[in-house]
Image 1: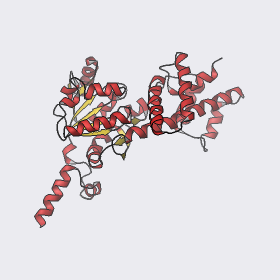
Image 2: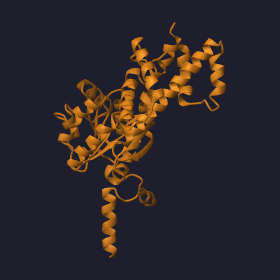
Image 3: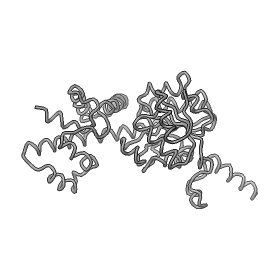
Image 4: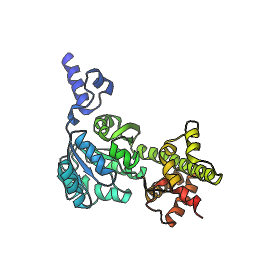
Amino acid sequence: MALCKALTREFRWRTGSLPRRLALETGQQNLRSFEMANVAFIGLGVMGYPMAGHLSTKGGHTLTVYNRTFAKAESWVAEHGGTAAKTPAEAAAGADVVFCCVGNDDDLRSVTTGKDGAFETLRAGAIFIDNTTASAEVARELDAAATARGAHFIDAPVSGGQAGAENGVLTVMCGGDEAVFERARPVIDAYARMVGLMGPAGSGQLTKMINQICIAGLVQGLAEGVHFGKRAGLDIEKVIEVISKGAAGSWQMENRHKTMNAGTYDFGFAVDWMRKDLDIVLTEARRNGAKLPVTALVDQFYGDVQQMGGKRWDTSSLLARLDKK
């Protein structure tokens, strides 16, 4: 009987079903199988490039990287080591964990289930972690496709912007199986400050939608506040110094009021990207019946900013629309 219990315990450990508290009790906070994992990373944009770097330098993993522009992958390898792959399928072959961070649903399907996509070579037992901000629908679709191959899928969109990616302090919102999440979490930790499991596949993307809903309203409110203060002839720095310590305080206020007041908008997440995200939000709201009047209005305001030539301005540029003569 004792031998049977021991074998059962070992099986549960290796399959990731043993509760995380047992790992803590035995002094092994990282699951052994992923301490030095073979990792693939698909998509080396402004977010993916530094995230992959943290997986290599902080996580200590061996990486194979793919980027649509091969020179970018070669540049990453020159900086961090590892291997540059010419297709997503080549990158994923033999990997324990495959990360992905691309532009949208169509890009995601292309590098996963498309020709030469990662799912062509995704091995049984491997975990595919998608950091793209995409729809919950595509997350569920890819979860089913991975499961059909005997592999696993976690939708894991991030918040924190380029600075968060570069500093390895992103917030990661995950959807997927709990046992799989616990196996993957020590790897994700390399580029994250906060990692949470929100529910089954698609839940990470739904949580990211809420994140963007909240940001849209906050930035518009801050833009209106700064605009009002300037028109009233107040010293914006003095105003923010006081109100940021009260109920009005926010990350946006602390980190963006100076640049907004200076009329400079090249400090982060671009308007084009925000509109892409808000389109995902509003599409999901139409599906589930949620009422998002403020979000819909702010999306229109960002459209105005695009018309002003601000497609690549950061999201705080809502103030430029108000300050426009």
